[in-house]
Structure formats: C-alpha cells, structure tokens
Length: 263
Image (cartoon, rainbow, N blue to C red; front, side):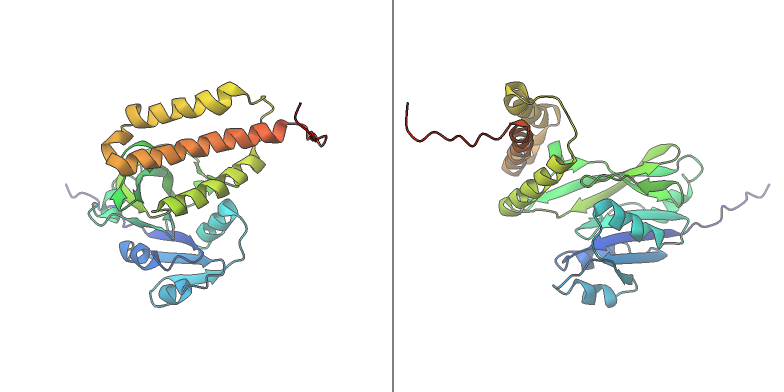
C-alpha cells in the first residue's frame, strides 16, 4: 500500500525592528530557509534597513504603534501556512532540527507552539532562572493573534498549543547598563498598565521581591549560570521591587505641606 505523502507546508517569519544592526543579519541568516520573511521597521537610523535590503527579506516601514500592534501588523503581511515571530535581537539556534520537516509532522496536532528562549548576559548564555522562558512564537495562520498588552505582549492561540524543540537566542540587554535601561523602561510601561486596586504595603514591596529571588536562585536553578546568573536574578528582583515601589508611590495622596524645620 502506497503511503500518501503529506503536502509540504510553507512557513513565513515576521520581524519588527528599530536600530537592530547589531543582530539583524544573524537573525535573518538563521531563518534563510523560510518561504517568506517580512521585516517591519519603525525608523532605524543605524543601518538596519540597509542590511535587510541586502537579503531576500521584504522590508516595510510602519510608524511605531506599540509592541502588540506592530507585531500584529507584521504577521498580517504574511501569506504562508504557518508563521514564526522573532524580534530583531533574536535568532534561531543553528543546531536545531530541520524546522519545516519537524513542523510538517505536527500540524494535525496543534495550532501553535512554544519555543524555548535563552538570554545572553555578560557573555554567557543563561539557561536557568529568569534567563530562560518559553513564549508562543509559532502558529498556524489565522489561528493566532497578539493581545492588546502594551508590554510583555503575548500571542493567543485558537486551539491546542504544543512545545517545539527549537531554541531562540536573545541578545536583548547583554550588559548591566543595558539591563538597567530595560528595567526602568518596562517598569514605567507596566505601571501605566496596572489596574490593581489592592493597597501595596510592606508585604508587596519587601517580601514579594525576596520570595521572587529565592525562587529564581533555588527552584529555577539560576545559580547554575554562575555569577552572570546571580547578577541577572538580582537585577530581575530589583525590577520586581521597583515596580511594587512605583505602584505604592502612585497610590499615595500627594502632600505638598513639606516640613520647614526639624521637630
């Protein structure tokens, strides 16, 4: 009995960029097998656009609309059966399995997939703690869309979601200085999105960050990443503390009757 050969599927990649010349070439090289690549740039001035133009990727300009809307615009430009979403500072690990061959065997089981993602920090690839996560980045066209979050946007899947054996390498903030800049930016964005009416006091400001740190170090084994893993965990804990402190500050009634002398 002759086995029916499954028709080959097509895979497109959606990427959004703004001044990603440090990594965009590596990003595009890691997905050279894709049937379509769409790069949506919001006004790079560091040569990112020139690098994209030198490849087979399609370059589009779109004024920045926010992470979720910008990425949704990018995936809407693709016509392929499946869509992979990457940031301009991410690339696929080149030691992974044949992407399309693997996907061709799983399309009847799931409508979307989570991929493993590891951060590069202080010249080390972090594999534990906050340095690693599993975001949804691959989905069947028409079965996934971005939520409306202004920060830490996510893809929502219509149907079952599996886990793919592929790794994304992320060069977001590889230095302490860059990590701190990211923390301050993300905390302010999260503060604007916060709708909680729960009063923030000692437990939220002190004990929650301490608990978070212990979970990262011991339960999620961040200690295995050595000093870079420890520093990354401490900075992530500081991010938790700073957000709680800023929420506490926002809940206080401004008092302009400042004291004029010691009492």
